[in-house]
Amino acid sequence: MFSTEIAVTIDQINYGGHVGVDAYLAIVHEARMRWLKLHNMSEFNLGDNIGYVITKATMRYKAQSFYGDVLIVECTCENLQKKTVDFSYKVVKRDSGQVVALGVTTHAFFNLELNKISDPPRAFVSRFIEE
Image 1 (cartoon, rainbow, N blue to C red):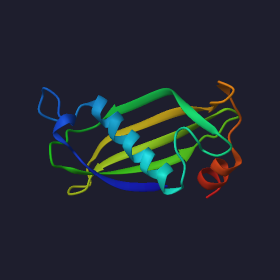
Image 2 (image 1 turned 90 degrees about the vertical axis):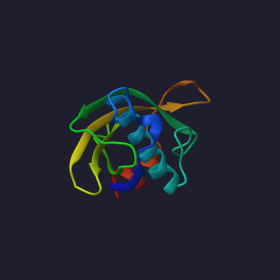
Image 3 (image 1 turned 180 degrees about the horizontal axis):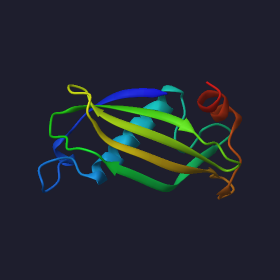
Image 4 (image 1 turned 45 degrees about the horizontal axis):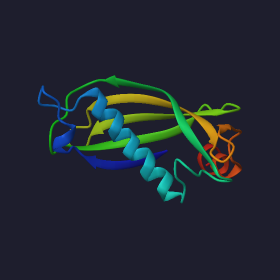
């Protein structure tokens, strides 16, 4: 599991004056990118020139958060299949511990050179699934 703090910025606030579900999706994307970077990986290269594409995204809006709130995003990598993997997210307000969003994104491994779906790279499996 990986955890990071992300402050709510003004561009994440919707017309209702709080963070919308679409912004929570962007927030978990930022957390996932930080996790990959920590392991010297990116969406374009998880090892062996294999990246991934998001094939499904689900966010459950649980509560409001507002400009300036600091959110803790917990990411877990799970459900490795032959060609896909899921990242699960829990987004919590740091000050209150209140869960504000839950989500899952499904990613298909993708060989950018061959432009086709691929098996997962060994480096990714060893760092994220077996850790």
